[in-house]
Length: 244
Image (tube, rainbow, N blue to C red; front, side):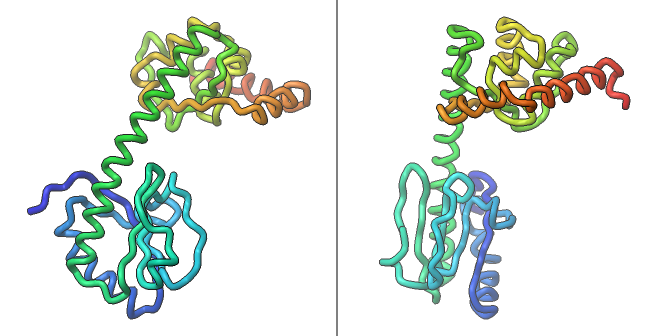
């Protein structure tokens, strides 16, 4: 039995019913012999997107679909190859079972390396953001966001921390805004963002000049009062122990 190196998501946008049926029949066998486990998902969230190579299409976003397989069409007209951003391959419309297994294995190996590099990049960015927060305080050029909610240990389960988590769950937010709306000082922010539970789901990004300008505009418009109202409601909810 082949060793599984991970589970990979895929989606197909395929041609005629006959070709679709051929692909699904061969895939049912090939997937059992591949290095990786496979899970079919929607096209907008697939790591491997299988497209009709005879129909001109715009290249998919490598962040969501790093692997693209074109079935049929002219290989010379397709953006094939491997880079740090993604991988693309071609299958003849009359592909064999062996061809499909080879393609699945190559996609799985690429994704294993790609995911490792993505994870390393996230860790490096997080380290830089934390270092800048410690050195520059509220002038830190990074924005902080939670990709999912996190449960804090009892000693850290304070109203200020809950407000900060809620703010980061809404989207990327700068340290200054995070402090203003949560009531936390820089040392408290550093303590919260250093928790292993938080760091596991924390994502950081640099503020662009455009984003900074937009933020400055928001700070001088009624949007600020809307944010304050939202924080006040959140504070009341926390004070009532989560009761409406």
